[in-house]
Length: 149
Image 1 (cartoon, rainbow, N blue to C red):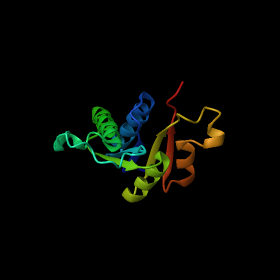
Image 2 (image 1 turned 120 degrees about the vertical axis):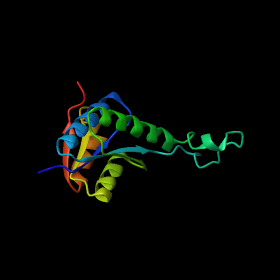
Image 3 (image 1 turned 90 degrees about the vertical axis):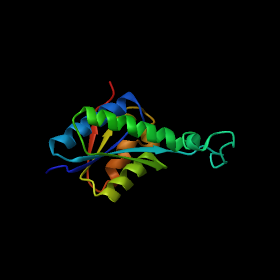
Image 4 (image 1 turned 135 degrees about the vertical axis):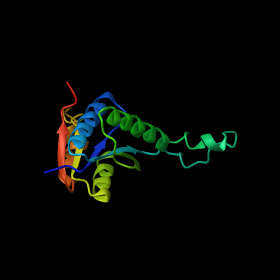
């Protein structure tokens, strides 16, 4: 089955970069598109207005969403280095697993690629992990890339 639209998550970490490279290579082999997703949780009080002393053209950079966007842009660069020309980025507020599933539904994705980080610690049994949650709720195939030692 060709994977024409592949969704991959990133948090800007080195392990996420491994998953992004894998997803980009796979999407490129099918002449497909990669949708890079980052998620962020606004900190309490982040709804406060930015100080007036910050220039208008820089205000957007002082938010959690801007950091998430930067992670997505960096991952887009990784994908383009892997030879993929069709790359989109999405930054979503909320839980990372929910964001991946939601974007996959919105875009009609054929595949979600996630890294295995979070699956090896004991806390995964209590809290779950992004790969575990995605695998149970995804509207499409899920590939878990081994990204940790």
